[in-house]
Image (tube, rainbow, N blue to C red; front, side, top):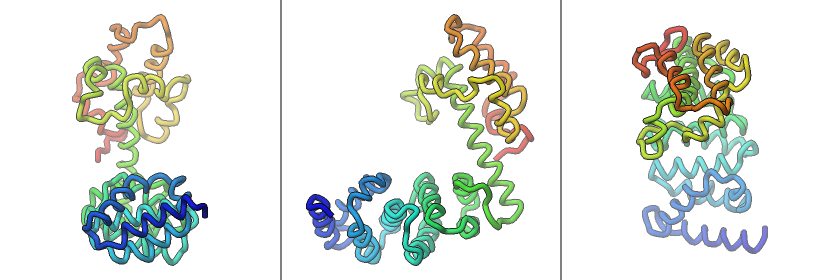
Length: 277
C-alpha cells in the first residue's frame, strides 16, 4: 500500500470513530455513496478499507439506508472475489434491508448481480427475493437480475418475471422510437420529467434495427411482433438515407402506422402475446 492510500484510509478511520449521526460519520457516508459504484477507486483503497467497513463500520451502523450503502460498497469492492462467509452474512442482511425499502431498485439490482458474480447461487437469491412483502417490487427486482433463469420459483411467479423482463426490453425500444418520431418529445425531452433513456441524437445512433433482418431476434424472443419489426427496420432504412428529411411525412407516418390509432401506452405495455405487467 502506498503512502497516499494509507493517508486516505487514515482519514476514513478518523471519520468513522464518531457515532452514527455525527457530522464526521455522515461525512463518511456521503463520501461512500459517491464512491461505492467506482470499483477502480475501491480497489485503490485496498484490504484495509474492506476490513474497516466489515469489522468496524457495519456493526455500529443502525440506519437501514446507511447499512444498505455499506453492503453495496462491500459487494462492489470484493466483486467476484469475496470471502464466502462474509458474503452470505451480507446477503442475509441485505435481503432484510431490501424488504424495508432501504435502497432503490437500481442499486438493489446491481448489488444482487454482484452477489451472483461472487458466488451466491441464483436460486437462493430468487427464493429470498420472491418472499419480499411487496410482490411487484420482487418481480421488478428479479427482472433486473443477470440470470438465464430464476431458479426454483413458483411457475406463476416465473411467468410474471419473464413478462416483466420482456416489457422492460420492449419499453427500451419504444422509448427510442418515440424520441425519433415525436417532434414534441424530441423538442422537450431535455426538460421532461419522463426519462426516455436516450437523447434525440443518441436514439438515432443506437437504433438497433439498422440491418435487414435485425428484428428477427427480438421477434423470436417475444419482445415485438412481425409488423412492429418491419416498421422498425423501415425506420432504420430512412434514418440512414441522407436524402430523407427525418421530419417529413414519410418518416412521421411510421408513428401512425405503428400505433394504428390505439392508445400508445396500451401498445407499448402489451406484449405480442397479449400479456401485460
